[in-house]
Image (cartoon, rainbow, N blue to C red; front, side, top):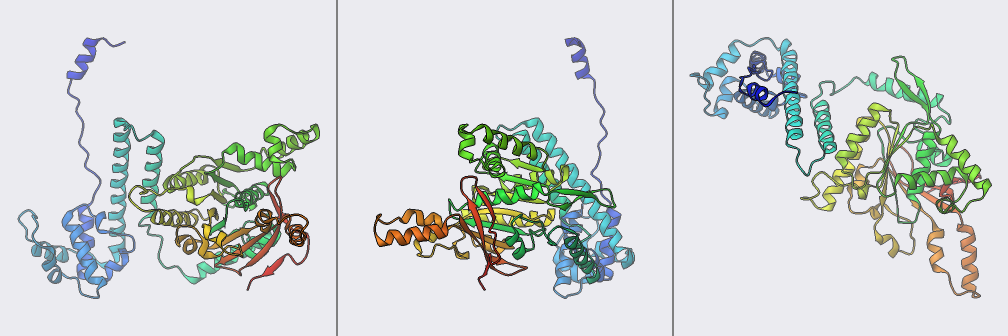
Length: 496
C-alpha cells in the first residue's frame, strides 16, 4: 500500500502528455474547394453527403456554404462571384480575394473531387467521435444527479447512430434494375413462406389475406377505444409471430427468419408479468383471472404447465419500462436488433410514449415526434412496427360507434405517418350497457342482438398504402383474451 509520502511525491512529479490535435486535412479541403471554384459540377459530386460543418477551417466552411447557395440558385460560383459574400477574414496576411485565387490556381481536377470530399467527411466523423468520447468521459466524471448511467449510455448510442446515419454516401438514386432485384427477392421469399405472404404472418388468416402479412418498414397503427381489446389483439399477433419463428442461415452466415420472427414488445401500460399471464391464458385456455387468483383445478394446472413449457424457447422479448421516451425506445430497439435480431416491434401504446422535448412543446407536437420517430425506426431497422393507439371520445357521441380515421386521438400525424391503420370494434361491448327492462319487446330484440354479437369482433382496415381497405370479422374469447379466425368462407366483407 502506498504511503502518504509516496503519494505526495507522485503528485509533484510532472507528467508529460503529448497534445494531440483533432484529425484534419487542410490540403484536402483546399483541393476540394479549388475544384469547385474551377468547375461547379464538382459540387454535385459531394453535395449529397458533405456539409459546411464538416470543414475544420471557418473560412472553408463559409466558402463551401456560399458556393453551394450560388450553385443551387443556378448561378456561377467563382473567386470573382464569391468574394463579395465572404467579408473580411484574418488569413495570415492574405486577403480573401487572394486566397480564393490561390485555391483556384492550385486546384486539382474534378475527377478527384469525390475522393477529397469523402476524406473531409471521414475526418469530420472522426472528430465527432472524439467529441462524443470526451463527453461520455466528462459526464461520467461529473455524475450529474439527474442523469443515470443508463441515460448516458442511451444518449451516447443515440449520437453514435445519428452520425452513422447522417450524411451516408451510399444513398441517392439507384438503378431501376436494383429495385427490381429486391422486388423479385421479396416475391421469392413470399413463395417459399407458409401461406405465400410477402410479409410476416399475423396468425389470423383473413387479416393476412387482406394485408399480405406485416410488411417490413411499415408502421401499423392498431387503434380502438378502451375495452375493445387492442392490447389483447397486439399480444396475440406478437405471440403468433414469435411462436412460428423458424430461422435459416444465409450465404453470408447471418441468420434470418424463414417463418415467423423475433419479437420485441414494449408494454408501457401492463407489467411483464401481466402480459405473460395473458399469453398463458390464451395458450392454455384457462382464464387469466383464475390463474392470478390460483382458482384452478389440477387439470387446469397441467394445461398451464404444458403451455409454459412450450413457450420457454420462443424469441419474445419484453420491455416493461413505463414513461419511456421515443429516443430511449429507439436505442433499445436498435440494441435488440443488434444482439438478438428483430423481425417485429410492438408498442402498447403510443400515447404513453414521450418526446425528447416534452417540457417545451405541446402534446400534439410531442405525439408528432413520436409517430415520425416510429416510422423512421421502422425504415431504419427494416421491420414492421405495430403500435397501439387510443381513440378520442367523440366515437361515443355517435349512434354508430365504428371508428373513423378522424377519431385518431391528439394528432393527425398518426394517420399521416402510418402505412396501415386498423380499428378494432366489438358491438357486444356497447350492447351490454344498453340492456332494456326485462320482459319488454325491446329486451327480446336486445337479446337477439347480443346473441349475434357475442364473441364477435371487427378489425376495420381503414387505411392501407399497399392494399385494399375493408373489414375482417374475428372470434373473440374474452375469458382468455384470444382473437381467432371465424371458421366460415365469407369472413371478409368489403367496405369499398
